[in-house]
Image (cartoon, rainbow, N blue to C red):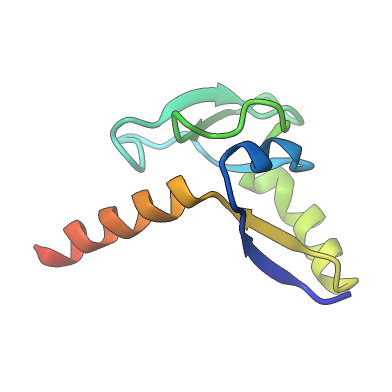
Length: 99
């Protein structure tokens, strides 16, 4: 198997993910409308997009790093991004780069 990034066909498809890697809480939030939750592994405060998948466990980037590295080393890392998130990030970057 090969590590890969997939843009899933629908936001609903992302509900099948094994986990959702989230940034730890920052001040200010990374995006102003992010929502706050807790990491399912360590309990630290995390931030995620309001339309993030609901079912997958939310894992902070610190807890996720060893898991991601292990999967990548085996060539089994699959990173998914939803169409909504891809569009939001692109719009955010365009706006930020315009200044």
